Amino acid sequence: MRSSLPPLGPPVSRDRVITSFPKWYTPAACLQLREHFHGQVSAACQRGNTGTVGLKLSKVVVVGDLYVGKTSLIHRFCKNVFNRDYKATIGVDFEIERFEVAGIPFSLQIWDTAGQEKFKCIASAYYRGAQVIITAFDLTDVQTLAHTRQWLEDALRENEPGACFLFLVGTKKDLLSGAAEQVEAEAVRLANEMQAEYWSVSAKTGENVKAFFSRVAALTFERAVLQDLEQRSNAWLQVGDGDLIRMESRLPDTQDNTRPSSLGCC
Amino acid sequence: MEEPPLREEEEEGDEAGPEGALGKSPFQLTAEDVYDISYVMGRELMALGSDPRVTQLQFKIVRVLEMLETLVNEGNLTVEELRMERDNLRTEVEGLRREGSAAGGEVNLGPDKMVVDLTDPNRPRFTLQELRDVLQERNKLKSQLLVAQEELQCYKSGLIPPREGPGGRREKDTLVARANNARSNKEEKTIIRKLRDRGGFVHLGDKSKPPDFRTTDAGCGRSSSRR
Ligand SMILES: Nc1nc2c(ncn2[C@@H]2O[C@H](COP(=O)(O)OP(=O)(O)OP(=O)(O)O)[C@@H](O)[C@H]2O)c(=O)[nH]1
Ligand SMILES: [Mg+2]
Image (cartoon, rainbow over all chains, first blue to last red; front, side, top):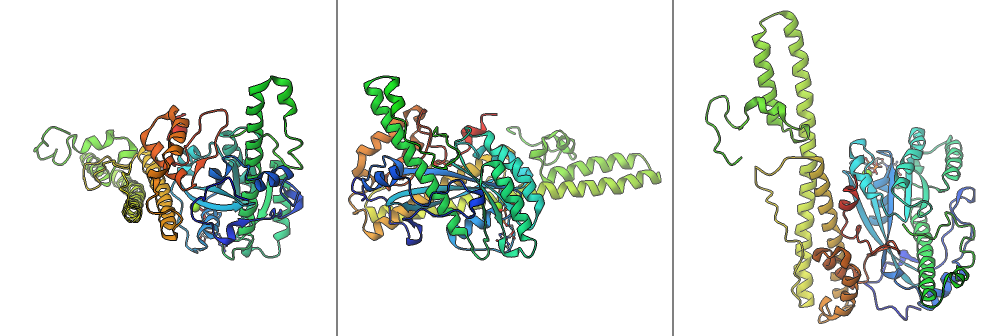
């Protein structure tokens, strides 16, 4: 399976091994409904024909108001800890998480940005070149949901249109009581408007945290492999002839309910 | 700064005297400067005599100055905190390097030979740019730390035989270095080489432009210079 690849780094821990395609949180707001890897992708993985994808580091940027729990979410996932005390992020921080997706090593660099206004000019310098933008809000504070639009807009401004997967994530799920459905319904509506996938999670209990990041990793991985395949087939055909052939070399419907659909890179 | 400090009574401690604090950029203000400002203002208020309206105003001015003092101190603390974190990371990276090179039987010539004298009382004060830089360096060190940890793990688990350290894999290095020659920067190359050597991290970058290792050297430098 990994025949063409040299052993890469220490093996990833077992709960970072993704073999089947992780599912959405709600079909009402998801980036793709498919529940298995794209045919071309699993074929490429089986043949070990994934180019340099295994060596790459995909960039994930997490934005949102202060205090919504961005750092907590990332720390729960990457370090499996939760701190009830608030310590504002200064500027930015990041974690690197290694996965093995369909037998291929794959890494995410997760950028944790500060929500505080005074750090915005520093944090926004890190938005560029993201493969994934995660906009977080606090499920118990509707104001923070209203602000997600602005956060997303700011992050998108630094990236090519259609180049990033977008996620809208409601945090502190453990604190939600009766009025939960209303907030979530509103969030789902907004997510669709943003063309984002909706999730709600709790860093405190860990609910959905791993499932969410696995989903992020799998979608990002898949797109990286498809882009790599496309790029290599283009390069190959450019050696031969001109545009006609290259047009035929386009991947057969890589969309498959996937959006945003641009295969252009960040 | 090169001139010997003036020894006149009023000018003591600061070349520009207490008045100089008022001419400073707010981002470079220290608590000292706030005291200088209050000294200057106090003196001028005194000269106005003992009109009760002056006294009223004086209360408010004192309050404002106290607020300013708090803000300035907080700003400097933030940077101080980051500095400490950065220093800790640096120590950790160096420790791991030593351990790693002992295990791998190779001397690791780290690229991070930057000299910052943190004990120098005359070191520059907090500016936004400085905060940016401190962050950037902290991030860079953190990447290096992660890489060093992985490397160590590899050695310990026997994945990389001690003899086959980074030195044994020059070919790949050359490739990466060549791909990156648009930004021929020794330091970057070294980091990438290391990242690459343990199947680590090459940024999933633009296909049409030269590889962009922005995030692996963990900087916002380039994008921030966009302004
Ligand atoms: N009950 C509960 N509290 C949470 C959860 N996630 C975060 N918190 C708390 O919310 C507060 C803010 O969390 P942070 O993760 O620091 O928030 P942040 O978004 O990173 O804030 P900035 O860095 O300032 O942008 C902390 O006191 C956390 O303990 C959660 O899932 N459940
Ligand atoms: Mg934070």
